[in-house]
Length: 272
Image (cartoon, rainbow, N blue to C red):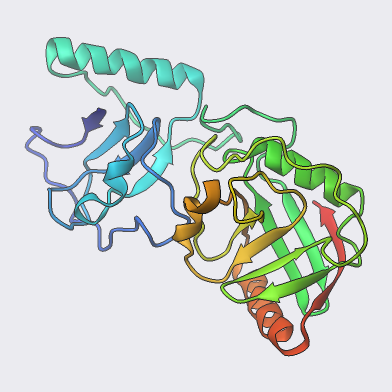
């Protein structure tokens, strides 16, 4: 269910083991088809130079033996085709030689987990609030239609002058209480449509009622790891993440201010 490579059988020793298993350290990425993860023995371990590429969705590896840490993904369709050819050749001939591996500049390509949209994958939302600024990195690799919907709402100025109005395990904002109606609902809940991103601290997800639903312009920023939201009521779709530590500090200030004063004004939101 994977193809695996590394120093195994070469007589070469790895340059020590990894000091930590980062499966749950940063933004969580599941072991879905085309992702690359560090291999280790069937015990909670960190691994070293051995890694594998998932040939199918192997989400059981996210938890097994401490989790298998995803660190990369197949970047394009041609590479996915090569992976499949390697899988067949290894079955037939026991191995496929790796001629060379080099590090190259990322050209902004992303894995074929989801339909591509016209917006750039590195686009940011810049939120100016009464408590400071927040930069949110959009994740069209996970939720392209959701990102497009939110970008249209932002460029229409719908969030300008609105507020954050909820603070518990998330802070939530949108058109709630403003008298302004959203521009229709999202047509699909993309929680599992593209590359799966869990509701961990600092991720941003679309809010919806406590039923399987798609939501609209209301969204929240997770203040802690809220992985129960990945499955609850059809899942709450992550479409962005807080981009830096300064933004996360602002998120913390907003959380405290909303608890104290019920809301924090959003002065302006732009794409850039």
